[in-house]
Image (cartoon, rainbow, N blue to C red; front, top):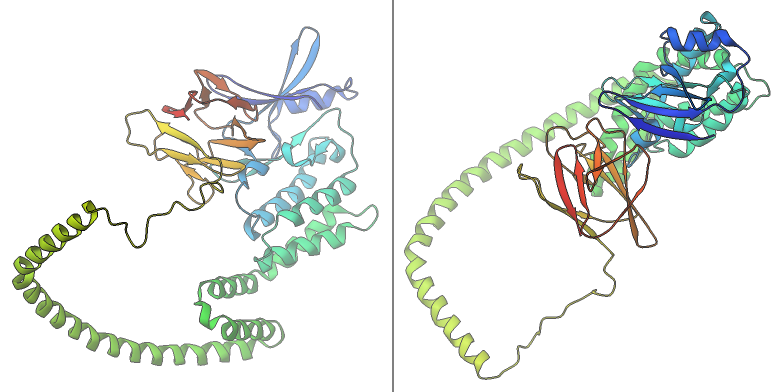
Length: 404
């Protein structure tokens, strides 16, 4: 399938070349003139007798790119399954086929403002939805954060159900989502337990893990036991905190008094200390000039093992920092949780661009940023890789860097 990306002053588009002549003209009319929920809006463009479908992806990003540098958590997975379920309900209302939905990861987009998901409907596409969904769930299981117990449980539960031949995807998602809504309070408690487990100190990991595992078991089998254990544990923590606070209060008073005493003593010793330091420095200088080698000479370690790095040298006026480019894939943007290189400036997208390295050569690509990426003054289209050379000027929105 031939896919290109284009941008004008106002919008960004994913452009797909027609593969075969459309059989159902009403589908094209519906997709062009009606805003179908959960589907990318489509325009038909004819150039030189060839038909192209232009999908509006302004303010959106491929879900694949959105997840760059992080795993799929419970929230995103729930949103994805819920949207597919809703889409199955919506399509018949607009006389559209389920088999026209393309579930390949590069055709699923997320709105960067509200995290709403959008799918691509291809008029020439005809793939069995249950088979496509099963294949897509296999990919999702690889991307799920397996430290997130709720996400892992939900993912494998859906995958097992959709492995049945000619599975009813709409029915499966309907029953799973209904059950998830009923179990939501339990999921939140378990998720909180998992979060607390990650935050505890290393020395207490094994002891705390046993407690949390047992708590999860009690939560499912006998909720009253879980409540009793929680209350008992809270009382113990309160007593421990009281003891710690009293100890801290006493030690704090001691520190204040000690600090005052040391400060007074320090002020009286400053002149003596300066004289002593000056004499010591003079003696060391004489020893060095006499030709004596230092006992522990300076050594440069690991020069050969240093990884190849590129550097973005800031050329603008907004006090942005220079950026070292490391690794095979390097993300740039203002989202500190995902981006490797942070650009704190107006007009920079959460994930703005990506620099990749293949066989020692660097490449630049835009990630459908709002204000664009430019290489030596030329715009870089979404997912269009451009080779980087030393001395190239890169512009992210209005911020310019020199690549070296």
